[in-house]
Image (tube, rainbow, N blue to C red; front, side, top):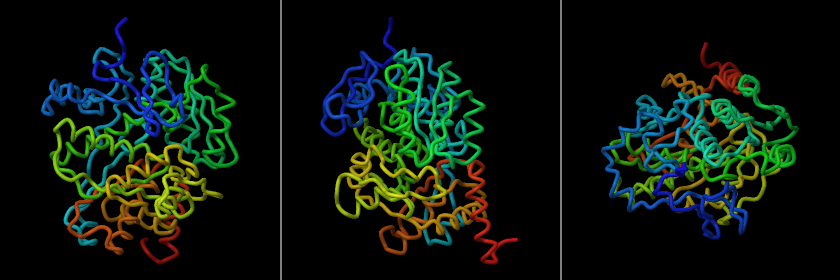
Length: 406
């Protein structure tokens, strides 16, 4: 039987201890040290066989970059139209902030209306390629919805543990997709403990953030898309809302791969990890100059995707930020809510709280001088605001109390 994996995929490598693993059996984390595994390719081979101009033959979604994704061209991938999202100019905000160029990568058009579709599409296809019989994960909302959707499309059972205060829209999606759901008192960290007992390996494949190697490959397509959408001229600064951090680490991997492929040249973007004051373990570790993030006690925020008190990939996130000469910044809950409304009223984008956090962070960095008015900047909206009615009620109530708006 032909391998489901593409020929240029050489091995999986531990980010921390650099141990190498083959793909002969399902791999989760490094067997030597328990840390995340990342996919490695023979990029010289890809460079010689795949010209940048040929990408269009694979379509307009994230599979456009199939040459640098894990699966063989003959593998019948489960697809729901993930990726290929717009990079929107924000001219009115750029003018008000004094910036020459400002864009927002709008991830709401993805399946299940969030960026999580990118990573879970690849993770579920990995489960199919390895012949895994069911998937499971803890989730703060969007990841569970995406996992359940792709599991349904692949014909796989799915178990998801979510905090009991997760917005109702996510619970409704999970029910619609036929997932088994457990509500947990606490945060995503508490959900992770339940999943370990409720959905044990090897019967269930854990597709949580960085607990398998392929979600990162889906998220790295964010970097490839930004590069292509900007004519292969990268921005100076990218502000990314950081919970588990897969997209931030994925973009760093994408830019490094593109350099080696010869698809981009010049200075790489500075990556900014954006968190919220009620849960900022990465910012605290960055400010302290350490390589690991201590768990955040009593994490609180309406931005469920940012309420990740102990990101498993803390070392990868901090390495990506520091390696790009970037930074990490925490914003207040109030400034995040106000920025949500500002993005909607100024640019017509109904963003999620995490999207609002990136604009609030940009204002802070402009004020501190860490971002210059001459910088070309990209913000991220990681999902549709329609999935966060509770956060939007709070944001609009603040505007009303301040006498702003109707």
